[in-house]
Amino acid sequence: MDAPDRRRFLAAVGSVGATSLLAGCGGTSSDEPEPTSTASPTATPAPESRFVDGGVVDYPGMVDGAATVENADGGSRIEYDDPSRAFRLEGAFEGETRPAELAVGRDMTVDARAGFVAPVYDPAAEAFVFQLFANGAFVDHADWRLTSLADGRLTPQGTVPFERIEGDVYGAGVSPGAVDRLFLADATAEELQDGAEDLSGIVVLVGRPKKSPEQATVPQARFGFEYDADSGALTVTHEDGETVSESALLAIRGGGVEERWPTPVEVGDRRTVTVPSDATVRVIWADGGQQQTIDKWTGPDG
Image 1 (cartoon, rainbow, N blue to C red):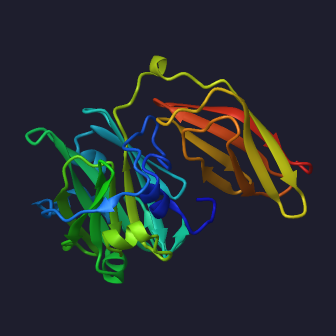
Image 2: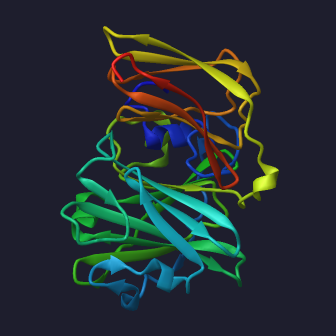
């Protein structure tokens, strides 16, 4: 999964839980999810126009303040209070991560294809439904399909029934039940599994309930760094200490790189990234709402 083309869509399919960007996110451990044919999810009404203000999705208003949204790393992170859940929205456009062509966020007026997925808890069903938003450029780009991932199985959910809400803002509502991942993509479930290179769309990573700080312990681990100045390749190795658990996030960040390291990570495991010689690179651990740098490297010209 080191190759850039095995990016966020493919990583999220191919190693469930491995690329979660959510503190405490879990899921299944299947490495080869299988597409299955089931009935389409229960459709829910498209979002109402009163939740779009000037082309911007008023998600906090939609859920009456029960969730917060922050934009980071080309996507969106959602914290839902009751029930306690975390969601991460990632985007890819024709195989590229964080591209200018696709904006993943609440603002549908940006000069790009824009999309947002809003989880809303339905107490009667005791499950989340998902309100999908997009601008015209996004809707017109492809026949968008929805695929869910739960219990290690990819389930095709059919073509997304976008309808105009107001102006250039479109919406749809779906209720796929309990899922670990939700893919709004220009690809079938089979294409997702087979690793198509040029996917576009949004993947929603669904987290487990947030842990309280006392439940998550920062691993005592030491990492080694070996740098090749000619190629710019930095190899990061877990050299000593505790295993980073499967429920945690581990990332290599710095020098224009943010590389998710599939967990669990044990002594002897290594990852290689390419960074400039003046970079400062950190190994970031996160779990249960906590985040900490557990080791770092500064380049020879830093």
